[in-house]
Image 1 (cartoon, one colour):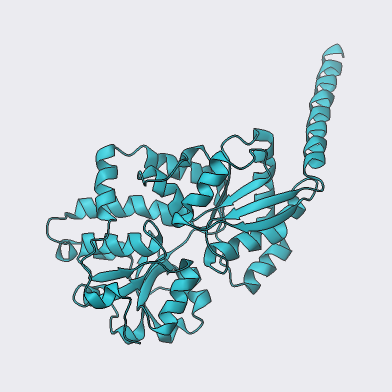
Image 2: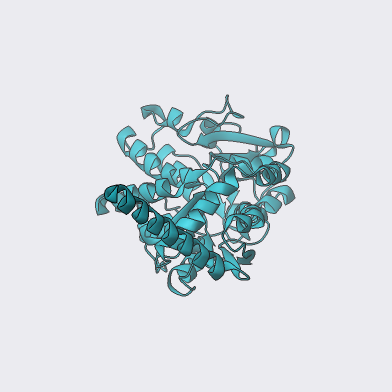
Length: 360
């Protein structure tokens, strides 16, 4: 009886302490604003996903704080990541909504990164993205085979983003002839440039292309899927690995080298639309915010809102994101150097491409 009494007393103490911690967290968040720092301009895919999460997540955080959006674009979300890592309060009132390329920027040694990607507390991702190489039908290029013969002008926001990395990787591995015009305000800026005929295509997520180009089936040629598995909507579009064959390799590149580079880079695609907290946020608040993130995913209001905004949801757990980044971080410096060379675009564009001129 004494043993049972001791167990009961211990259980009561544990439950009481847990309830007290929950009350403390609710008291902390009550009446507060939680700032979601978005590393891209308003209106783009990352911003849309951030605002979608922000409209619902506060209901699942004890104390029901208000989540407000703060756009801090620049350098492929590196500016936003630097801010959340070293300047913003480390108390659980700031959430980072960065591009998936921002984490890789540090792992690949990009200049200007002042954070360690593996030290962020990753909450999770709203979508495991399937990347695509999308080209206007008027460009006259329907396949990767044709892109190895005819130049296509791609729009890009800045070095280090999807718009740069994947055209460069295809050029350097598969001998495609993509050219890049930089300086657009995020993916939405590139979308407008495609509509105006300034550029002919872009590297983006299928979910974004389908959302931003409602008539994409007639207006856009999807050359290839940048993913390990096909998207259900694109059963007839080849995967990038369908081209990792001797006959498609650029001179001097082996099939093994190309496979290694692509498998590392597609970890980035799997990160999709990630969210994180700073490195020194107390573990109890990290857990509460991760729990809130997971709870949102099953919320009928959130699901209806995602459908209304045509936001594809295929969530990735925060622990899984941590493992993905740790895998890349454990690569040898030789592998990192080789990868950096493979994703670097050689600026050998013709004058028309450099000026941003493209025929409508």
